[in-house]
Image (cartoon, rainbow, N blue to C red; front, side):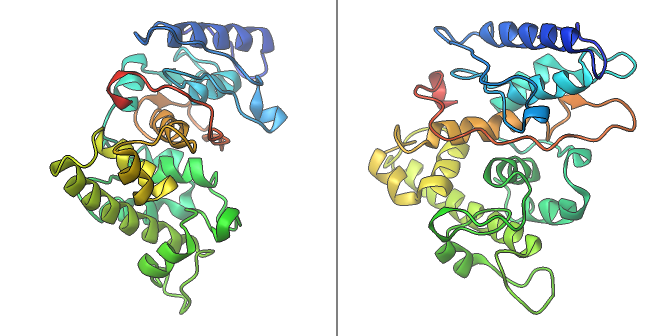
Length: 275
């Protein structure tokens, strides 16, 4: 995943960086992968770049398109080994606090301490996928807020965590803390199902699939469902671990861009091991 890119505004260098990143993604050891950019330079266009099937490196492509990569003055520093490592991890690594919008940071950190299995990096990456940090988002099926919980689950897990005398999914603090509690509850359910061999697969993947499609869908599939976009949902969250970990460092004084989440249904076949 090369380190040859120019600074901000050098479009020809940036295109070279994108090509290098995509070529590197193809060499990550996942056979038969096809990598394709949907739209390049998404920050300007307002849409995302998808490098799909196998490994997603779209956050890196975006950041390198904006800042360049290589670690020199004015360039982002990318630890290629850490990118792959955190993608395949359990998500409980140290949170890159600089990548989280400041107004939400304390809630993200607190939500990541609700249980041992769900860390703050998972919370942040899932918010990126669910709402792109839009705390007033009104989604489908009655979902609202920054964490997009199903209404019945927010009713169950939501509390007045921001102490404004109102428990609302449109309050970021209430939504993020409810997200943490719900993920922890799902994690416990998944642990029981795996122990009893009712489902198989990676614990985090199963938990995220249950958040996206419901626990019953995971039970019915006896693992991560092949339909409904669960696989691309998981991959989208895992790909954001690169940003919300220590794998990418921006030039001094620069802030992390808000990156559009991967659309569901982008992936048909996961790599071996369910990740």
